[in-house]
Length: 232
Image (cartoon, rainbow, N blue to C red):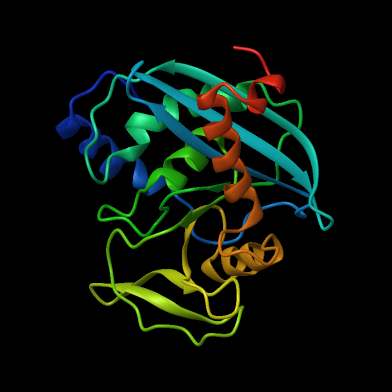
């Protein structure tokens, strides 16, 4: 997968925020995606001791969720930790990962926010715009906004609202467990994003694509079995 070159990465936090504001106009919040036959989950692990970012992606075929491919890459960690600017810390290594995929996914799930972001341009939006691909943000906590608690039944959800705008959904993926926070990334409606998140959930709190991507990059970071699946 080739990425669009829309900006530099060697920027200050203030410049990064301005880039988010400029690029958010490219985000499409309506469904413009193909028939969804493959999905990918992606995540990044940070090795702060070595100042490295390790990114990974796993592609699955729907509806069976059969794994087709997994790849990883690493690169130096150069951008500081700044809340709301996660994409400038993590996307550079992710672009290296997606460039290595043989299977182009129809939708990418990322372990982070999409539209549910102070500037409405979280990492799932940024990744989708750069890769010209539908994306969904699947986060473990709220970055901005508030919501009522959904019922305890799996599949129930409530809107996540910020300043009177619906920016995402609080989704229960398993009976009586903590919810996850779903938001649009690019080229997908919120309703479709929720539907897809339910389709790739398999009885655990975290949907399978991002859960397994998290396990994968952490295994690579530890030098365990993940390193068998790709080279640097």
